[in-house]
Image 1 (spheres, one colour):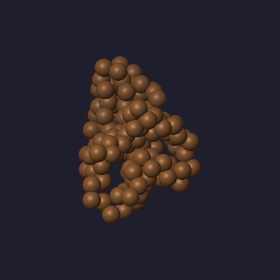
Image 2 (cartoon, rainbow, N blue to C red):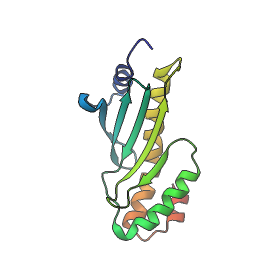
Image 3 (tube, helix red, strand yellow):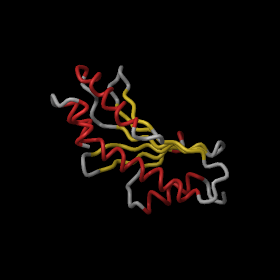
Image 4 (tube, one colour):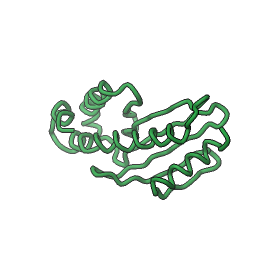
Length: 149
């Protein structure tokens, strides 16, 4: 690669017209996102040496303790549909996130790959965000929330 991965990510974020903050200490980008179904945060972590990128979307809303089991069911249903990336819930903190990562080593078009990672993260998180909120804040069963998404 002629450009660094961080430079490529910067260009792609500018192409998406995102406002973002780069945290040099962690080689990480922080991006607030406003989707169709809510708003959340994305962190893009870059490992230049390993040529590795991780994109993590995180809900600003924590899981309610009494809803964590139902949210686990919903997340399991969501993850069964996707072989690339996964949703998770931290049962101790209630943080719900979507993680996608990729090794860019030997990738001929890393710009396209990074663009696809960012797009996939935004589209998937936005698609299921409403279902996550419905399960967290209503009595809608996980299976129905999933079917509605």
